[in-house]
Amino acid sequence: MADHAGVAGGDEVDLSRRKFLTRATIATGAVGAVFAAVPFIESWSPSERARAAGEPVLFDLSKLDPGQMAKPVWRRQPIFVVRRTPDMVKRIEGHDADLKDPQSLHSEQPPYAKNDLRSRNAEFLVLIGICTHLGCLPKEHFAAGDLGPSWPGGFHCPCHGSRFDLAGRVFDGSPASVNLRVPSYSFPKEQLLLIGADEKGVAS
Image (cartoon, rainbow, N blue to C red):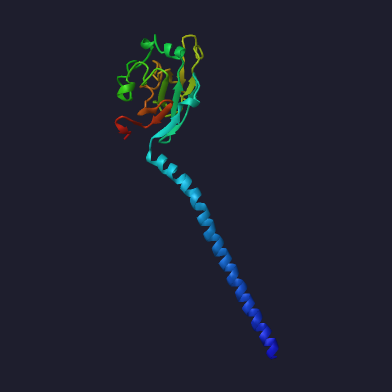
């Protein structure tokens, strides 16, 4: 009987030991998983915070071919970055009489974009890609004549028909009353665009 009791006691000890080891293994695995996840969390947390705070966004202009448009995101808004060709720049002229605000007197843009091209230079156009009517996303129609024989190229909003030229200026007859907005931006280096900051600092 004593031997039987000893065996039973040994089984209880082994069972307790197995339970302890199992719990310890699970706990260690859980802790290890947390520590393994830390580098991954740290890798995306800063960019998430940056987007939430509306911090400036860098865009490499060398990736954009002449005549093309890219759509980086800043403050959860699509930004239209257009690399205009000389022909596109030329087609900005000659239709001021068809525009609601050709001199951008009533539209929103930094002082350096308050000109016929609505940009710092002729080559790059930077716009907030949201229609100033009800917030839809205009589509690019850069080819001349794409929306009719007199169309000089630009943007067309598919929601309610607002049209904008290759400087983001709104045409008469459009539901939108003002031109597409221009955000603060700068060129810290050649072929590098900084959206959301300029010489005055980060956009408020």
